[in-house]
Amino acid sequence: MIAEFARAMPRSPSVERIAVAATTDLDHLVADEGVFDLPLARQHTLRDQHVREALRVHLDGCADYAAFASRRRFQFTAAPSELGAIPLVPSSVFKSRRVLSVAETEVAKWCRSSGTQGAHSIVGRDRTSLERLLGSIRAGVSLIHAWLEDDLEVIHLGPDRSEAGDIWFMYVMSLIELLYPTRHFVRAGVFDVAGAKARIHELVGRSDRHLAVVGPPFRVLELIEAIERAGTRIASGPGMTVLTAGGWKRFSGKRIERDAFDARARAAFGLDDTSQVRDAFNQVELNTVFIECAAHRKHVPPWVYAAARDPDRFTVLPAGQVGVLSYLDASATSYPSFIVTEDVGEVTEGACPCGRVGTTLQVHRRLVSVAQRGCALTLDAGAPGHPGKQR
Amino acid sequence: LTFGPRRSLAVIGRGGDRRKAARALAHDVAMYDQRACFSVQRAFVEDPSDEFMAEVERAFALYDTLLPRGRHDFDERAGFALSSLEAEFHGAHVLHPEGQGWSIIVQPADLREVAARHPLGRTLYIHPVSDVSEVVAHVGPSVQTVAVYPSDIGFRLRDAVARRGVSRVVELGMNNVFRVGGAHDGIYPTQRLVRLVSMELPASVAVKGIVVPIDQTTFLEQNRFTEFIP
Image (cartoon, rainbow over all chains, first blue to last red; front, top):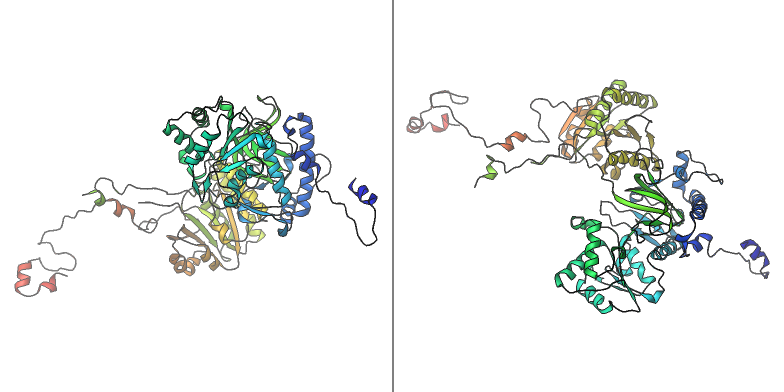
């Protein structure tokens, strides 16, 4: 169709005219806020089509991935086949080498994991990948509500984009500023909890604006604790949403159970219901952000094939079984976001209690890696009779 | 006192009986399913020929029956599979036979990867080397035991690996045998755990270094103190 358009264009003898697809079907899909309301069969069709197209792109563009697929005796066929057979790249690979499907000059941003568990993953994203990532946030937010730009005011408990730099989880959260009016409350690495609290008091109760408190759970908890200590009452009712993302990172010692977290958030912010507390999931190797619906299930858009896998051979498990989570994310163009992760969870399909039909995801925990074991034996140097115990 | 975690390496030269080397290697990997500090996680091998690799496969299969792999939880199994898959992505030759409780990954030694985490569970990384001395660069204080075959390689490597922090150099296949008098991670731990109290022999007993009954006043009177009391 584009070629026909190019041929139909008036020609000048001195100018070669080339039609370039500025957007693709996938771009349109990512930009469609009704994407989670499509019938399941349609979602499957779109997912299969886009993942297969992405597979071809990465086999053509990424020599490392093509060689890996060849070693695994995988052959691309245009005909529909099991997506579960597509070779998966362990997410840890991105810690040791740069895997790209485009020239390095096309990388618009090198994205770095927070490295909570050691080495950093580094992922190169081109503009298309970044734009689709932003689109996935917009689509995911539609699971909460289809706000127009000025309907929502964001209190972001993190830094702005320039300060977030290339640290992935901070960068992804800061992208909310591109969608809605946002004020950031981390500057030079310092969380201005008093400022965030004051801003909530300033905005809460305004009938023309919904308020969203966005941040990692440890920062939201810090804000909750400050509100609890102050003893002031915030009655936001239905007018506020709390959106967490990024996990507990190095603050895992402060982690509280999700139910307890939601209950404290509800009490501190005066929410009507804990369904107003939502979590989002992403990792640096994945190009799509999954956001929870009111039933606290993370919905998977139809450009991602998510599956739980058995831990021995990574074969796809039936829906609802707990396994190692894997994703075939068609939205990444600059690298193969066909990954098997170090997360344990389950993928379900069908009707969600929120009323939508589709694929949902629950991330239970990280895999516990086997540390170097052995005689890691600490003997009590202060045992009775030991000189160190005497005074 | 804190011990470990530490890891251990094997070094296999060209000489000797390679079938014996393969069996000794399988033993030192299988013992305690690599959960001990002395368990071999990586082997640096001169000339890992197809014949040698076939011997190693046979030996690992043998040990799968002699000492079947223990139970491993979900996370450990996923760790084994992820490590194999990652190595495969990097172009390594991966042997992970269906139904067998072991994996062998053959890939060049990379300083970063060698120091990286290891999934254990009878996963052996084999790093081809042109000379066994290449192992020295991969040795640090985290390495407890260097197991060598043939054993005379130990004399060549001993000083260099000791300087880099290892605690033991043993013959391959003997990792789990701690000889009487050998130190544990470079020390005698029991001595650090007790307060030693001495009850000394009386003056009438002549002991090593002193050949007469001890009468220190007389020694001083005769100005012979330093002669008798060392």
